[in-house]
Image 1: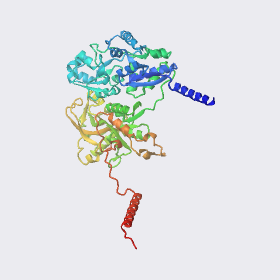
Image 2: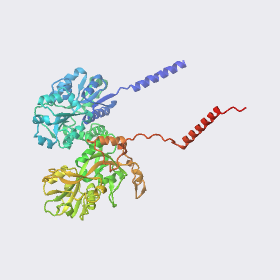
Image 3: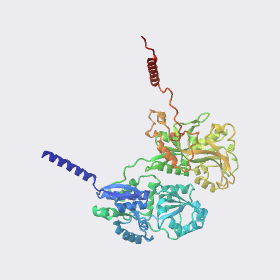
Length: 616
């Protein structure tokens, strides 16, 4: 009896354990882009608020995959657009939201899928261009683009190419587009479309009208003048079997009805896609502020900070650095922090990375520059050209040698360092006058007489271009650089030209210098060298650990172009060439040598025993 009771007890334990492991939880799906992730986490949060069990959020690569998962029962609910729902079931797209919702409810009901209340915004498809390219082509509507489409490259996501009624092929047929080429990216990497548009590798891209990048980059949406794109209002969709199984599930999802406008959703997308915040944190924070859930955002990591000169903190180079860092540090918020001495911010631990010109890697206090090897280059972001800008009010500054003062950014900034180099290399008598200017225009506004402003920026940088368009400025060449040993003494400054026509009233090319701009981080051993006035460890912050090789590679891959870091700069070990393994040493160690000697002696002795003559 006792034995039978024990067996029964053990069996009962297995049954209870199995029941616990198989406890049914609600499974939420998401497409793999920011907006869908945010809404999926909102759905999970309101369901948990009702005390219902949620397994978490599962991502799918595209619309056909997630819809099939819902129909099979792999997931119980996910956020979908009514326009997409109609298209995926072969229905005609509709432009009226109420009519689209009524129709999509009708066609999905036989599949055992219920559409809940709409969240409040419509995220329609659209085509976007930079204002400059749109003006160049004379385009404001999609129909305007048709006669120029053969000379245009369009960027799209792979999901858009697969859509049967509202995707690339039907759009081309409706409007008569014949694009010169198509650049396709995965749905999960659709942010690359904006990178391609901004760097000029494509002319027009397919966008979602609630994308945060549209306002952030001041892009122009082309008018859909033929009303090709249907309405795409988002709502949770859920299996009717799950509604029956979990009482209160439908009511929980309906609390999301009407809570977000287009502008509000665009702001949330910006927090995820541009600021690098976690979708779950953004979702919970928003619901808490609206009073829909009782607890706020989940705990998130501190932002990853990139320190750079105030003069570079808002330009195109900082934008490129942000995009590269956000791809390398997935899910991490990344921010730009202006600092007069960016590399010092890395040493202090107030920044993880620094965006600097090549000149910042050198100590200029001695007779010759000495390289600062406690930092290393991680990824090339671009190139700055040295702009020597003078006032046209009088002709007292015809060349850099005529300057009485060199106006620069803060001490330690690239502008200040380059002015220091020019004064030494060209033997200038001009005084260096640093300022706390936060933008090139702030320096240029103070120009007068024979003063010359020294600004390091990419040729045609928007803020510089705007200053030149206001008039009263001219660009001076760097003359006399090849005299003496400057090419050897300052090898990190290269000869270049600012092409003619780059700025207003600049009709010819101007000879100047260029400096590579890179993301930099602490080099191996830099923490040991970080000893401040308070003794060892006073300035050796935990963040002084070198950036891992895998992250270095990801940073470099996040910048289009694949340019190599200037060999005169300290370079991360991840970029070191892979050399063949040398042959093993003949005598790798004393122990092995002694062993070999002993074995040799033993074989000699055995041979002697074998051949020695027998003695009588």
